[in-house]
Length: 220
Image 1 (spheres, rainbow, N blue to C red):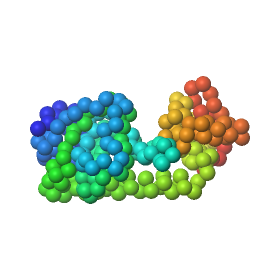
Image 2: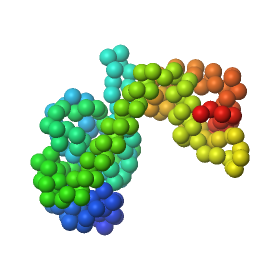
Image 3: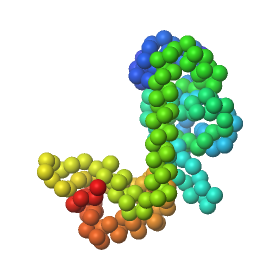
Image 4: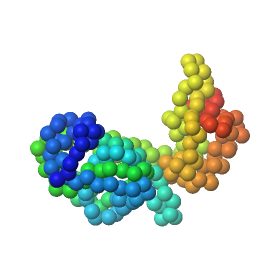
């Protein structure tokens, strides 16, 4: 049986929707610490434990035949990881690594199914999260298959940017994103991303400053 703090319970409550769900997860689960950089779910593995993030962040990715990593999802505190294998009985569909030090509540697949059977609202919340994640992954795969890299990079930078003010065509990204992390998100190499970014800078669509990127004109 896990021992959750009041802060842990508060983190889980939005997803659980009912304090009794949190109580059941606490009864069935165990709290575990995972160090930054640790791979705790491996693509195609047969394990089926489910992880509820109490603190920290994680990243899901796939590795191509050529050895290239493709970033799929980012997970924050209060989110669930591994539920698809638990619900389908199929092997893991991606690998997951701890992006920071993490504390997680680990529950078995059987335990999760038991809680879902007894709490309909919680089951609906999990179903909605799975559907949203599948939609996002499908859109990412579609974009990777048909969109040129400069278009994909522009779209990502727009999503990460903020407006400088009303009626201003300029948008800002601060601090400057880490190229290796952007490359993972786009499923490309750092070198390809760097060439694409430099191309957009030469075209005058992006200005690079020491502490921020400036997006100019109409990129959408």
